[in-house]
Every structure is written in structure tokens, then in C-alpha cells.
Image (tube, rainbow, N blue to C red; front, side):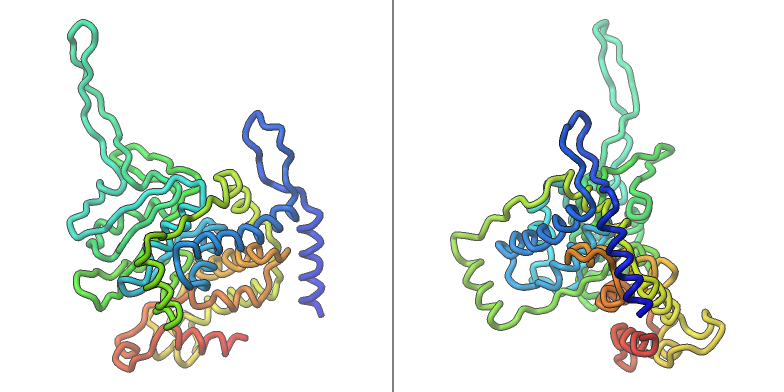
Length: 363
């Protein structure tokens, strides 16, 4: 009963709270209330699903998780074998949003400066024929609102590391000058399975900066027939524009103000702590964790669970996030934060198997 009372109180808070969307300077447009923004988020979720479905068949769960990452201002890593429309999913979502979109194709010869940009020496001639030299910064493809980092694990770790500061701080340092990235700034990366030729493992520090790891699975037989029919016809489908840049920012600013129940926060923290083996906990924990996990999720994992739960609640028009939102996001939020042991690999134990045991022990 206490949890329900907290949930009801959170609903009343959000309904009475004033809103936060800031209209452009000089605009006379009224500010929307949080309740109106919640309704807009739910409507936008349905519209964005439909917009992406005009180009991509199926993958409803993947699209929902991408929208969670979008509203939470988080980065997302899409994992799957080639040919499952990972790139098309990100590109289609970008078309439905009025955001500046950039794409980086990661290859083995890609350099860090090819992503962040570089300083160049520029010569300018004045009216008297004199030459003036100055250093000018040429921005790289990372200076966009929404970045598609395609096949991110096909480039060496040195180049992958060029994204670390950008993903965490939303800025990059080139030489001695720090440049601020556009707002919003989000990375949607695609990754091929590590077992494939020509791939490199992503550093743990970089994986931890992704809010979600989204697995893209094979389509069903019915969906595959529709894919074969649709992609071989003259009409490939058009993606309508759903949200403007200002609307995206307004919905993103709403998410941190979504209330969350104490039970949901307690569950998120308990789940994150339970993924750490006995050596890190100082006491025995979940049997599967102690046997198969070398390193568990840090505090960023618990933070990500709460933030993603708030975004999921907003997309459903719910005025508060609860334990069900946290439970629904355990795998995409935590699985890439686990460093599995060699024993787990030898015995075929997956990260999702461990997380199931963790959820069962905590719930």
C-alpha cells in the first residue's frame, strides 16, 4: 500500500507541476504543462513507431528502446548480424526527427581526427598582398545532433576511444581547445557480433557510456516475406517528419522531472549491486554472479536504470516510473556492463542468464 500511495502522490506532483518547454526567443507561444508534454510524448511514441514502420518491417521492441534512449538523452548500441536493418532503423528515426544527422562509417583505417575534427593552418591574403596565417578548426562528422556510428567495432580501440569524451561530456578537446557539441547530442551505434572477421572488442569504459545495448534479432517468417516484397518493389516508403528539434528538447527536458517511486529506485540500486561478484561486494551474492562475472555494473548502471525507466514511463503517458519499468529494462541497461569470465564463455553462460538469476534473487 505504501508503494501505491507513493505512486499516486507522484502522479499528483507531475499533474500540478508547471512545464518546462521553453519556446524560442521572441515567441509568444505558451509553455506546455508537464501533463501536456506527457500526452505529447505518448502520441509521439505512436507516431514515431508508425513513421519508422514505413521503412522497416517489424522490430517493434527495438524501436521502443531506441525511443527510450532518445528521450533519456542517452546513447544506444544496436547489436546484430549484418542485414537486419540496424543502419536503416537509425536513419529512419533520424528522418522522422528534425535533428541534424551525421553518419560515420567505421573502418580499420579510420583515425580519431576523422571523427572529432582537426586544426588546420589557413593562409589568408589581404588587400595589400600580404599573407596572414591562422589556425582554424575543421569540425568532424561528430558535430551533429544525432550520430550514426556504423559498425563501430570495425575500427581499432584507439579510434573508438575518440568518442569517450564526446559521449560523456558532450564536448571534444582538439589540441588545447575544447569545443562544445550541439544540443541534443546522441550516438546511435551499430555493432556486428565480435565473432565475425575484422571486428575489435569495444573497451569497457566506452560500453559503460551507452545507456542501452539493443539486440536486433532475425525477423519472423511473415516479416521476412514482407521485407522481400517491400524492398524489391519500386516504392520503398517515405518517413514523415514527426517531431521538431524544439519538441525533442522539450520532451527530453521532461524526463528528469518524471517522478519515480522509492521501490523502483531501491530495485534499480539492488540490481546494480547484485551484478557485482563477491570480491567487489565484500560478501557472497548471487551464485551465478560469483561464478561467471569478473566485473559487475557500477553506479552508472543504477542511474541508467532509473533514467531509462522514467523515459519508458513518459513514452507510455504514465506520470511516474515504477518497478515494472525498471524490470522491463534490466537486460538492455545492464548486459553490456557485465564483464563475463572465461568460465562463462567455456560453459556457454550468457549475460542474460546471469541477469535473470539476479532479477529472480532481488525481486
